[in-house]
Amino acid sequence: MSYKINPIHHQTLPLQPPTSKRPDKSGQVSFKDALHHATKEKVTVSKHAQKRLDERNIQITEQKWDMISEKMKEAEKKGVTDSAVILKDAILIASNKNHTIITAMDRQQADVVTNINGTIVIPD
Image 1 (cartoon, helix red, strand yellow):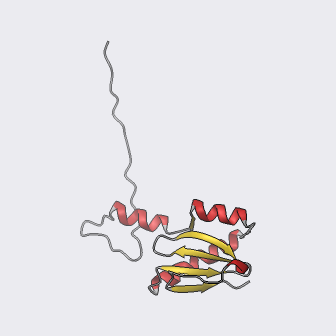
Image 2: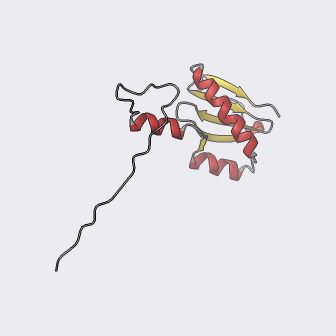
């Protein structure tokens, strides 16, 4: 029995460098930097946060998610790593450095919020 091995042809696509990182001398961007840039485009909702959103019937429109994402980026540029995102009916606890929503609660449940170093208020 013999096997024939076919070569795999692939095309290398240039990556756009992240705005905060410059390419090295060869003009290449590291995989780590490219991945970091690509994953920071949208907010990630953790499984725990999604469960809380579902349990508490907290509805957030795509437009609001886009606004939250933009405000989290702004806050991160100002050095905020962990924030409370305050909406009309809910408060989201976020890791800005990971661009992830960690948990969610309705406004009535949020008496005290700890372990944050910034607050983001999203207008209605």
